[in-house]
Image: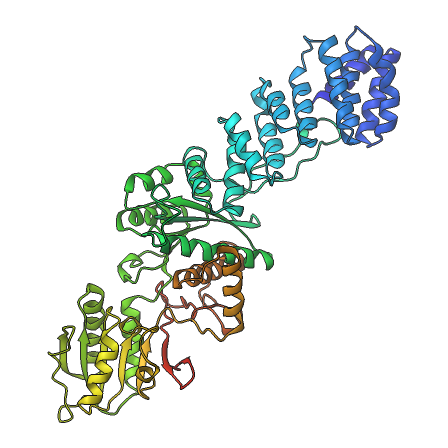
Length: 557
């Protein structure tokens, strides 16, 4: 260290200037900065000799610790003018840069630090810049600075972090994406102290990945920011934006609970090259949770990366069990079609003593897959399937009649007109049996209340949100205030998902080794029906609701 070298030299020479310098250094170590300056002031008048440049430097260091940053710069400029060839000039540049940064003169600080040639100071420069850049809250200023110094990694990381915390503008997200691909993911800045000897003595050990007090979450969605047109009201990627905006409200909620989550958005579409670039970026390993990608090939690559580096991965909207099969760190946020079939079949056993069922399904692959899975579960439970049929829009193919009545009817359809039509058909044919249907088979805006008032109509409704709960009102008010939009189902899903996994990470300090508490409880304030991963990486919560005359309510399974 600089101060140790000086004291050794002073002791060897033993003349009064050296004693003054030695005493001044001791005062600095003892944080007696005024006394140190009193010893050093006469020495700064010297124009030659080995002591004079050290006296200038330590006088500036004393002023730095007294927060007199303009005096620091004046003394250091005098040192550089009088002793331009001093061997410790890199320390001068460092202290000068620190003084500029403390006064908010960031550009001058960057210039001064950029003159340092000693590679040993690289870590100290990183620590110093990271701390000060993280204190800049003016997004436009940080963007201008990054444009002026495009190769400064610490500046780029600070800008990424500020964008992710404060902005949802398309241009900003695009800039964040470009910078992240080049510079990696930012970590939380650590406070910097000038120290009592030299600003280069600041400790700068790397943070451990776990137990670090915050959690990095990579959001890997098809934002398609290049295609966004502000004038369009209907966008193909709106669901991705809604999911992310819900997460941002969850991030604020977690922060109020003392859980710090850093969100990093990446524009990952059905293009494996983007995901490949991310997993090959050394900074990407700093993430604690990956949400997405939503397409098969990028998801496969992300899952391999997550398993290799012990990182959790959540599939936010998929209902395919295959994505988490034999993948210990991958989870489905939504209940899979398999879980929906299992839980619904279990519920169906309570509806009637007649172990017979008729199953109908729509045109989509999801419709037929759920119907087939449900049929298998009922057969396993000893049910007889009287009809298993794909239905036409007019329902002409359905053979149900009063004389041919099953114990219950199951409908899996993504056509929101099908549900009300089937309700009316059953009434016309006097088939008075329970109807269990997917919520997607109904239009909750256009269908009359009379459709839902059927006493034995039950809906499998994974996206169910009770609008009469206070927590729902609070979320909607905050969302409308910030986005000027009514929240969609995806916004609710994004909020609950990050809230749950953020809390889980904090509770387990990043290591989910105990599954017994890996589920929600009612008092935790979630918007949807919750999560349960105590025995599977598939969400085992499958909400089934019915209309009670005034509103939809959960049916106890």
